Image (cartoon, rainbow, N blue to C red; front, side, top):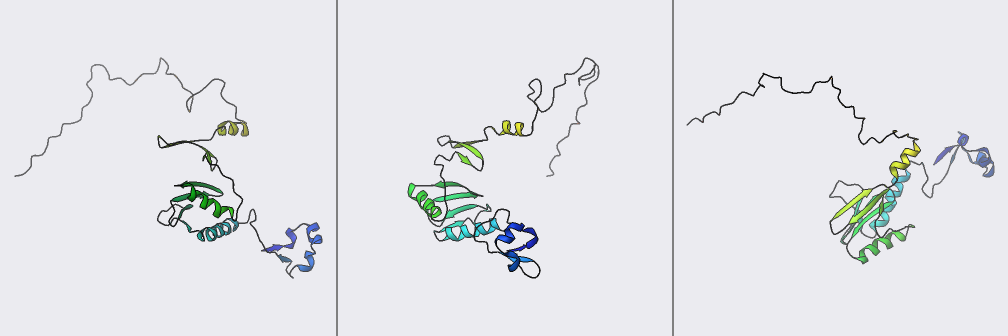
Length: 194
């Protein structure tokens, strides 16, 4: 990567004698060996490295769906979705789960949530018998209200806007007395030509 010498603090330039190593246009070149926060290419480089490492174990991103981040194994009954650094895994059989864990632990430090209670900031409440999952974010609203210093209403208001009751002067939509409401004209069915 190329850096301007003017963007580097003076004490770092002195410590590493960068002035002697700079080009005539006052640039220094550095080699990046790991990911770097803020580097636009970091995500792509990490993704390509993960693809290479998991391909060796026969894991591939699904090509038959248009769902980026959905991975499957060539023959094992296991799938997972990957969002940044969160894996949501669906598998059949403990040995298939252990195969994925071993493939990841070879290169990465991982933590496991065996109950699958957290994923991408959501809390998941699984009901396997009813084939349901309930998603929630406990404490999110309270935290946001505090963060934005929101003052709640003096009395509870359980609707998007305050209710304004009608006054006596307002008239309601009722049919006028003595007049018949308009009806739609009756349509006759056309008789088929025989």
